[in-house]
Structure formats: structure tokens, C-alpha cells
Image 1 (cartoon, rainbow, N blue to C red):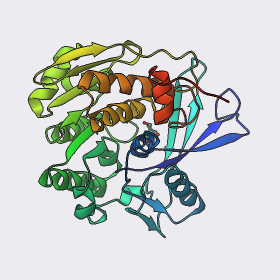
Image 2 (spheres, protein in one colour):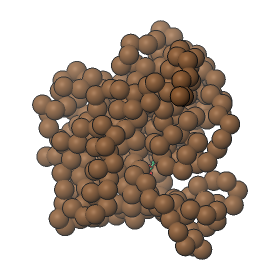
Image 3 (tube, rainbow, N blue to C red):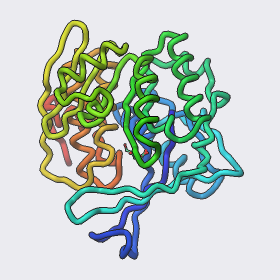
Length: 310
Ligand code: KDG
């Protein structure tokens, strides 16, 4: 559950201040995860709200076209589909400018959540972006968590801290309150540092687990990932790709791999490795999810299947 946006990126190198031409892609942390899981062949649904406008039609046809069930998406006549711009800075980083305040998805509320629909899932994936969008979204996230817990659905949570959307102290307080109620917590190392106040991933995982989650996976970027449960822990190295375009969407790709591995009943280290591989492929394209492999492609990448191109 969460907001999808239309992302505009300059087609030429340089700042959006000077750009004349833009490409347009669908983005959004949670819809990225939904699309990635669908590409892996899993059955997945996305709960959200869009404006009844052409950009909303673009978003819905893209997400539906990727095989995600969109029956739980509603449309607003009064509020638009949110957008953002990616600004490629000279030193290779991507900065984003959001135009999502007052968007249709920022009006998501508990009434948009259908308990019966949720009760059919195996996992519910949420991020710290949604509660940052406004009070009704915060209520919707808490309601979704309550419904998932009531129905025995495992909740995965990526803090996805976006300090352009809320202030640090509110972010910390709300994220801590949510982490206490989830099963799997998937922060990046900098996010884990923001939440726990310590630098070391093993210490970070201990602190997060003491709050409630049974599984913690800290994403370490070029150093891979560290995972921990009550019974096991370990490091998984990063997967190397030879082509870098844009890192937005990599964390969501990691969540795709991890959840996909768990749905396939892989052991945790293998699922984390799948996360590292899909996260790495995310950086090879301009769009967030376009680089995520399909299941067949993943099998080739992992060496389980030969490549047949003709
Ligand atoms: O994780 C990728 C997202 O950050 C991007 O698609 C846009 O959802 C988005 C956000 O709020 O930053």
C-alpha cells in the first residue's frame, strides 16, 4: 500500500533547471515492490489512490500492465496524481523534487482498506513514506497493520526515510512506533543509524529486534546486506553490475528479492542474496523498476538456467 507518482527525468545530462526534454516513468516505493514481485511471477495487489486525470491513467495502465492487481485502487475527482522530478547532479547523485502535497494518495485513509482482501495475502509491504504523507495516511498505515496482524499476515517494513516529507523528530517517533508492530524491518544502514543512533549494522539489528521485528535486514549498499533473526545472522556480499544509471528504486528491488525468496520458502541468506541481485539490477536503468529482472532472467543471472537469445 502506498503512493505511486509520475517521475520526470531530464533526457540529457544536467540539471532540470536547464533541461528541455524529460522522460516519464511510473515510480513509488510500494508500487515498485508490487511490480517487482509480479515480474517474479508472484500474485500481488497494490492498494492506493490516484487522481482521475491522465497521469493517473498512465500510472494505472503501467502497474496493471505489469500484472499487479489494482482492484483496491480508488480515484479522486478533487485531488491529482502526484509527480516528482529527478535532478541528476554533477557528482552523480540524484536529487528529487516532489509535487505531491495534496495528491490523491495523500488522502488515503482507513476506509480505503478492505480487510477481506488483506486477509488473503501472505505478506503486507509498507514503507515509512506513507505515514509521512499526512494524518489520514498515518491512520491508514496503522489500520493496515492492525488488519494484517489480526489476520496473521506477516508485515515487511522499509523505513524509506524521506526528510523532504517530514521533520526529523516526527519521522523518528513515528517510525519507531511502526517498527514495534512489524515482522520484517528493512532499513538502509544510514536509516538504521538515524533510528538507532549507532553505526554498526550488528548493533543496529540488535536494537531494532529488541523493538519487535523477528527479522531485520540492514542494506549496506556496495557492501551487500546484514541479516539477523533470533536463530541466525550473517553478511551477504553485494552483487556487481557493470552499468550504473540511477540508484533510485534499488532498495525496493532489494525488498522484492527478499520477499520473493521468502514466498518461495528459500532460507533467509538466499532470500537476502536475491534481494542484493534485484537491488543491483535496479541501478542499471533510469526508471525505478524497469531494471528488475523477471523470474526467468533471475534464474539466468543466478546461473540456474542457460541463456537462449535466439
Ligand atoms: O524508492 C523509490 C522511491 O523513492 C521513488 O520511486 C519515489 O516513492 C517515492 C518517494 O516517495 O520517494
